[in-house]
Image (cartoon, rainbow, N blue to C red):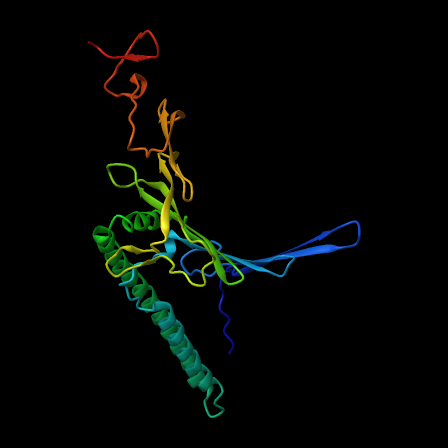
Length: 297
């Protein structure tokens, strides 16, 4: 007897080849291969491009889901189920292929096969539920104990938001740029997580090796000390921007964070202050000389 397993499709790789022709019959070919290598999500994790010069350009991306908790050991429910199912099938085939077995024995073997298959599936479902509950227990415990760098990432995982955290670009096997996206809570309730900053690794020449960001056993993010703050965000708006080796330019937003109202050079966003009646919650709405709010004196 032959059994067939039904599995859903999963994209693992895609290749795009671009060939550009010129009037003098020359042609330039560029090939880009996109890989989907993570078991935690379906986002592209690596793009390998070979340009017309034969140079290899590689971009690697780590998403929030790739920073998994490190102290959880799965029960391997699926692997155990597959192994049990194979043993059950082998037992059935042994009896069916035995010419000394009669019809009654083979019929009983079919009955036993159905019963054992049912129990194997039942045990798999039960194991999966227990495994999931154990994972959630460890996940929630790690979320409570995680530091400020890792807890927002766990929150993104809980909300099934798979956003890029670290992007590394390589050329001919050497690192030419590295970017780390910082996420943090933006509300007092501790439920809303948004992008609050972008960091870029500082180095003067391409790097042969680089320590990619990872999760420590202490429930914190380990990343390269080469990372430096480049862009700061608040409520989705840019509030700081620092050039490599240069000064910082800061921005102040008003009108309920809709429009920039001030730009300050050579200062961080915490080094200057500006207030407007329109954005002050303590101001009184009414018929002011300008705007829609005023202060009582």
